[in-house]
Amino acid sequence: MAHIQYVDGLIREYILFRGFSNTLKVFDNELKSDKDKNFRVDKVIEQILLLIHNHDLGGLRELWAHLNNHLFRNLEHHFATAVNKLEQSVLKFYLIVAYTSSKTDKITEFFTKLSTELVSQSEWKEWFFFPFCKNPEEHAAFAVCFTKQWQDTLLISLHNFLSTIYQCMPQPIIAKAESEGCLIKKLQEENGLLRGKLASIQQQQQHLQQSAGSGSHHSRLSGALSSGGGGGGADQRLTADGRIKYSTRPSSSMLSLNDLQPFGIPPPTHIVDDFYIIAQESNSIGGAAENQARGLKSLIRNIGSGGSPVLGRRDAAHERNKKRSGSVGSRGNWIYS
Image (cartoon, rainbow, N blue to C red; front, side):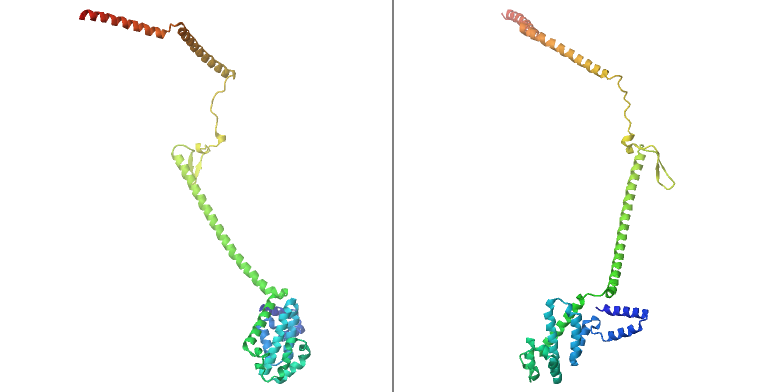
């Protein structure tokens, strides 16, 4: 939440603009004693360590009460255990630093002021023996708190816990001014890039359409020239700008159905004439059929009487051949006899 400093500057500038001199003095004094340190976690941890090493128990309790009232009390109920454990660990760390610094008076002061509060907590029962222990770093109940690993783990856990809270806590509208301004600026830059891409795509599409239109125009022009060179088509001539101007007479390839005219066939004089022609054709066909029927009847009659003209002709031819063979044979017999 580093933008809090920027918001503080805006508020200070507004107070100066309105001429609130007394308000400005109070505002500057409270900024100097700010316990949240502009919501910078590293500064808060640094302040806690400074109070511990300076053996300022009152300042440490005041700072933790401020964090508890402004931050921890707004958390959900299941975080209360974690908050309590961190607070007890910070107090134990205060005792460890006081012992390593040989500040026995600070240890006595600690139990004197907080005994009524800590006596009801089970985890502090063994710690009441801490002021009387000669070598607490070797005692099983205190030895773990003297290790560097435990101390570093405490500081890292506290740092992460405060960082999470500061990131998730609700912020006033004025605190979002810088972030929203940066977001708007970023969105404007992205919109500018997208508009540039869209303009380039539209230019490419227009270029492709123009090239496609010029290609189809050239193909139509070449087709028109080829049809005009073959002798058929419309009358063509060039205009002043080099384009081809067609006459009002359309070519045969460009005629539509509305331009087609029917053939010049004269209509019949009367519709009865068609039926007369059909009747005449049927009469002629009927006469030919009647002639064929008469021929068949005569053929059947001849077959029934036994005198078939075809068979009669064959018998007559056979008799003539027989006579000729008999004359030749008698003559031959006369010669050889």
